[in-house]
Length: 375
Image (cartoon, rainbow, N blue to C red; front, side, top):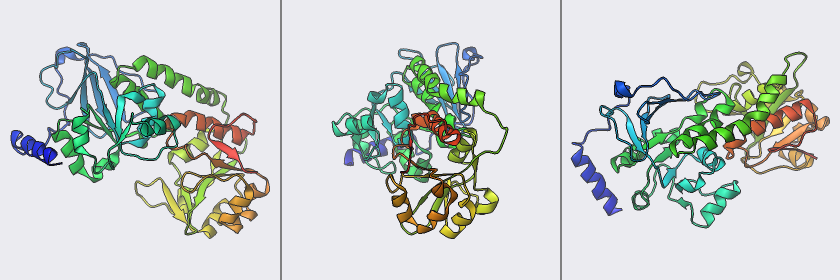
């Protein structure tokens, strides 16, 4: 650690104790500008512009700006307002846990060398961690800088949580490690989260593979969308879990799970008005069981979120959470499903989850990937 502190001190001396250049302007040579862009289907939190000299300009919605330079390519002049990413990018540190599955999906898990999450429900990721191909180097807010340097980290991919500890981001940059803060959780469309795999494919020279994988994964959703009809009454759906202290945790209306329910042909049964939703960045909120009873007793379908306290298999297990659930219409009609625990870590499964929701809402009997019915 002493070595890291010494390097940090030297970097500060060399930069005159100034911060990194602001990423607010598009300073790229006019001769390199091209009209070619990556056509995005669902994502709106990043943009990609292909330049005539082979470089690629990448813009992130919060003002981050990067210039991706191909291997052996010349770095253009006047790019001081963009972070330079020179390919090949190796030994990545991915602190954004939701992004790891995207790298794995396009066959680039071996490009990641360091992570900040210990426990995984994704078999390939847990296996790589167990056999040493992936290294846990501490929490996102306090990574092992010594390890990052020794492993030759070429890029750090962080979630927006890093903005809560800006000194960590500053130290990474001071060590010469470029930092990309991914914003997939801010995507307005649920499949926009998954489309970030196309950006990661671009960074790692795997654009063709990423595009093909994305098309394959979203094909089922496109079929549902094409066949979707707004006629008739939509089944009402509640998505929840019961916390150890007895509160019911529900998704806020408009978050990506409730949006998926609507896209799949259902109607999310909780409204912002009925929940008295507070304005904050959280996608969930806790309410009293009495309130949940009043709002969701007549819901056609209940989905129990098993991510926090484990999966349920039977109605009996559900009723042990709270006996009041026995009065719910969905319980009495046997229309209660439970999510699988890897649902949220498996970001590439967004399209499959949409299909699952459509299948239980329409009762078409198709096999499910992330949900199972309680016995």
